[in-house]
Length: 136
Ligand SMILES: C[S@@+](CC[C@H](N)C(=O)[O-])C[C@H]1O[C@@H](n2cnc3c(N)ncnc32)[C@H](O)[C@@H]1O
Image (cartoon, rainbow, N blue to C red; front, top):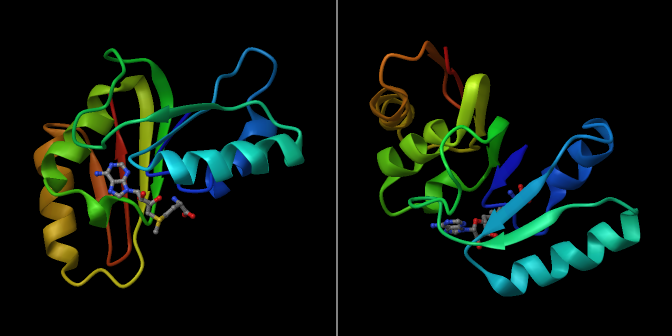
């Protein structure tokens, strides 16, 4: 599982206990300072997570490595949102899912447009605040 724009790792730390012994959880954020806090919090929580500095618009991972990519309150900070969504999809394994959560989206249609653009042929459902993309 990959958490994009993970900040202090709130989502990654919730999911980490659920992935099982063979699972892998990675938190990516542009801010090393955020990741330092995330790392401390994960130690406190007793969960194992890999922390990676990077930008959502150019994820430093090979194609198809994750069954789940999530981003909570992170996508709105991407300078190029369609590129960020496309990167999330690129990082997905076949059958994987992207879940994006945004509160107070100024323009839901922009988000849906970005998801369609990035998802390219993947089924996409969305409403004002959430987009789910599944890779076939
Ligand atoms: C509002 S916080 C959300 C953090 C976390 N996902 C949560 O729900 O608590 C947004 C995070 O996105 C990160 N961020 C901003 N621009 C980014 C980018 N282009 N690529 C990756 N992370 C970015 C920020 O450093 C910040 O940690």
